[in-house]
Image (tube, rainbow, N blue to C red; front, side, top):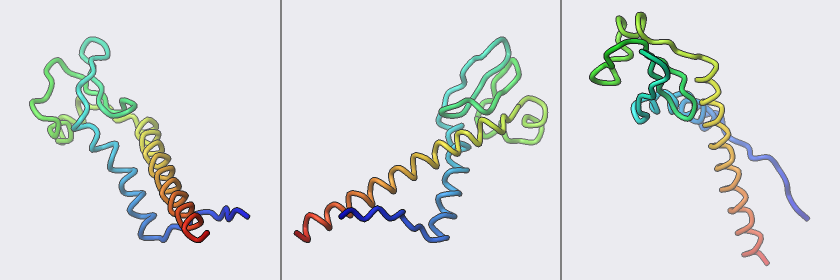
Length: 113
């Protein structure tokens, strides 16, 4: 008889997962390359480009995108795409957790026989 109980995750673990899901898309800005969209528009972010930079000259360093002058004058932050990225990270983490729990449960049942 199969035991299909949902995985119970404690509150601190949920908070860590939430923090990772929200921070990983922001960190992806530093790893992705500028993608020229049209004219003077460049996009950043993985897998969906949620940060757009408008300007002729790209900043020397990507952290300059978050300075007050550059962020308020040259950057557009697409919030729905950012949360879509965060949701995709959440789904990936959830699938990994479920796979790990499932493999642990199958190892226990096979070793108990």
